[in-house]
Image 1 (tube, rainbow, N blue to C red):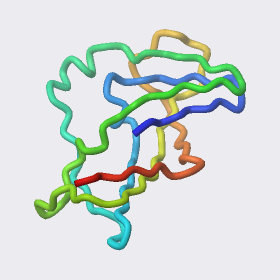
Image 2: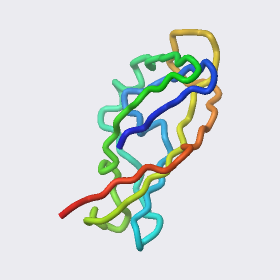
Image 3: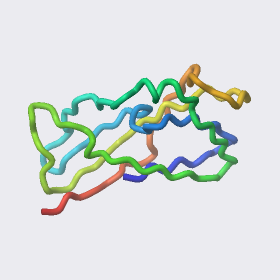
Length: 124
C-alpha cells in the first residue's frame, strides 16, 4: 500500500526504518468488518533504535509517498489472508515540529489521521 503524505504547512517528518512501526493501522474486509490484528514484530530492533531517524522537510503542498506491505500484519486467531476486497485506515504519529535536524526520538508526537482510506484487493 502507498501512504501519501501531503503537507499543508512546512512540516517535518521523522521517519524510522520501518514506517509501520510509526502508524496505527486498521484493516477491514468487505462483508466481514474490522479485522483483529496481532502487533507487528520488528526483527533485530537493536539496529532500528540505534539509527537516527531520517528527517524530511516538506514544503506546503509538497507530497511524499512511502510504500508498506500490509500483509506483514498477522491476523488474530490464526486466520489467513483470503481473496477479497480490503480497506485500510491509518493514523501516523508525526514527530515534534522543532527546527532541530538530528533526531533520535520523535519528541511529543502529533497523531494525524488519514484523510481517506486506502483500498486493495487480493486475487486468487
